[in-house]
Image 1: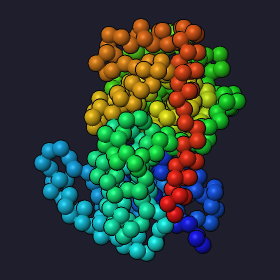
Image 2: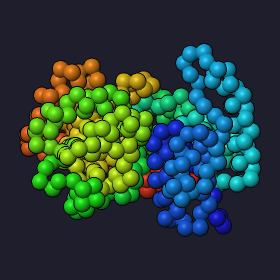
Image 3: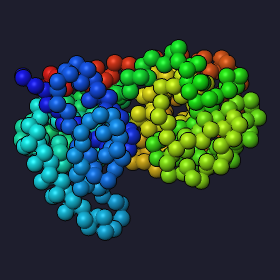
Image 4: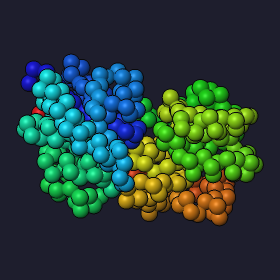
Length: 361
C-alpha cells in the first residue's frame, strides 16, 4: 500500500466529532504521510472544529428526521439524494482505503456509498444505546467498535470489537498539571474547585441548577468553573465574579480537569469516557431528552460500580444539596469514587480502534 487514504465522518455534537479527530490524530502519528479527509453536515459544528484541528472537511446537505411533520422532514428525501450523490463524488475523487463513521447524520450517506462500492467501513459507537444511523450502517459495516457491553442486541455479534471510546491524547496524562491548570484559569489555589460541564452546546437544566444553588455551593468554601455552553452564555455571564467563572467553551480540557477537585457533568459518552480517565469525584446529571434515555444508561454503568454519583433531573430540587454536601465533605467517598471510576477507563481505546482499522486495509 503506497499511501493510506482515510475518510472520517461524524458530527452534529462534540460527542461525534472529537472521537473522529482522536482517531485521525492517531493515524497521522503512525502514518505521517496518510491522507485524511473529513465529511460532515454543512451547517453543523464540525465545519469549524475539524479545520481547527488541522484537517480538511467537505460538507453534505443533510439533517435528521424530526419526530413531527415539518418542512425539514419534507425536505429529507431531497437532502438524502443530494448527500448520496455528493458522497459518491467525494469517494470517487478521493479513493479512500477505508471509511470510518463515528455517528451523526453525515456518516449515513457516506458509509452507505462506501459499502456499495466495496470499500471497507468501520462504525465507532460511543453510547450504550446506538443511534438510528449506526444501527442501519452496522448491517453492512466490516467492524463495529463499541464502548459498552451487551450491544449484540443491536449489532451483528461477529462484527463487534470492545475497544472503549477514543479520547483526546492530552487527557491521558493530566497528573502533574494541577498547578499549571490553576495558573492558566487564574483559580484560587486555596480553594477546592467544582467544574460544571453541560456539553458543547450547554445543558439548560444544569445551568438552572447552578444558578439556583450557587450561594449554597460557594458556602462550602468552593470556587466554581462553570461551562454553560454557547447557547446560554449571554444569559449566565452575569454570574462571573470572585470564585465563579462562567465560560461558553473550554479550550484546554486537560488543564481544567487537572485543576478540578469535583465535577458535575452530563453523561454523554465522550464525557463519561474522559471522566473515567481523569478520575475526579463526579456527580452525573444525565439528560433525559436523548434517544432511549442513553445518558442515564451511560451514567448507571459507572454508578453500579460505585464510580460516581448520579441524580436524575427530577431529583435535583429535593436531593441536590445533601448529595453535593456528601461529595465535597467526605474524603473516603471521594477516594472510593476516584479509585473505582479509574478502573473503568480505557486509555488505549484510540490505538485499539486504529489497529482494527488497519486490519481491513
